[in-house]
Image (cartoon, rainbow, N blue to C red; front, side, top):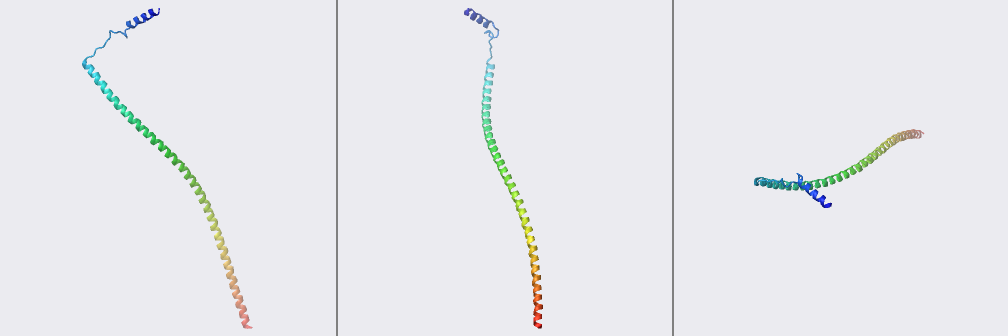
Amino acid sequence: MRKNVGILLLCLLFCSPQVSLASMYTITEEELTQLEENISELQIINNRLQKESSLQKKRMEELETQLTAAQTELQKAREQSNRLGSQLKDLATTSIRQEESLRIANASLEAYEKENNRTQKRLKTQRNLAYGIGAVLLAALVRR
């Protein structure tokens, strides 16, 4: 039975128009030459494209490396910018505190200057009064 199925399949295979041995192609020498030239040209094009592809792959790898380096540098720059921003805020706060301290010191100096001026005027008045009293007493002593 297996033998019969095999023979039947073989017969179907030979009877099929797609597998027919009668449909053989013949080409002229000119067509063969043209076909060989086309194959040769395709091989040249294929080789050139492979070289270009290899070069593009290398260039892409270089660009990826450069991109990675640039991203690393950018991240470092961002971190440094954040640090500098933080330092700037700290310095601004310190500057505000120092300005306030300076304002308070100036106010204290102005108050001290006013008090000193009052003290000097009082001392001058007391001195002049003492000189006057002394002069009057001296004059009274001289008259006696």
